[in-house]
Length: 249
Image 1 (cartoon, rainbow, N blue to C red):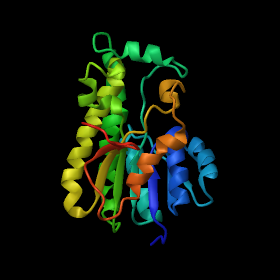
Image 2: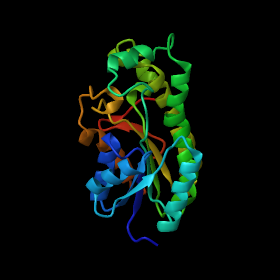
Image 3: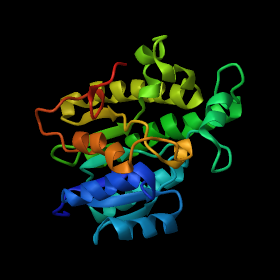
């Protein structure tokens, strides 16, 4: 049995995921850097820690997910932390301006094909990876699951006419609302097993999801996810928060 705690971060070859991987490594974890392209994960892992390892993981490909779980079982025997970070905001070319993404995501004009692709990664991908990793998480003494959500998926905030960002409630945001529901469902089911499941909002962080138009650094964006990954036995489960506290559902 591997003596260090083991964490898997999906979509960890760049952005917030890469920073979460670095932060968890700094807390003593052996970090598995999940990436759709293995070579990208391999390059990223070298910047994380000496014992960080790249793992090929396309959350929309069931064979890839299954192979990743099998590799973790063979090499480590368990998984202590799963951070479901992989996500997309659109299916267009990189460099798409945020205003264009928001405009195209409005419910009156949103592409059904694009919306389905967003849900495939941001919602069904999370379910698929969590299901595959659950037997490994059950082998850990105090497993934690962190789902990277967004306050743009908050129905309470998006129902408030005073919220200036409610205009951003498009396909990406719908997927985060659904992810919140998935978080609550897993938290309820796994509570008796001692596995805590929480949703973290990184805030408006500059990443390729928003064409780097965000106002927060990846270091700031990673902070809440790392806190939730490190929760002790008295920590909460089934919550939705950012580094300012509770985010309303």
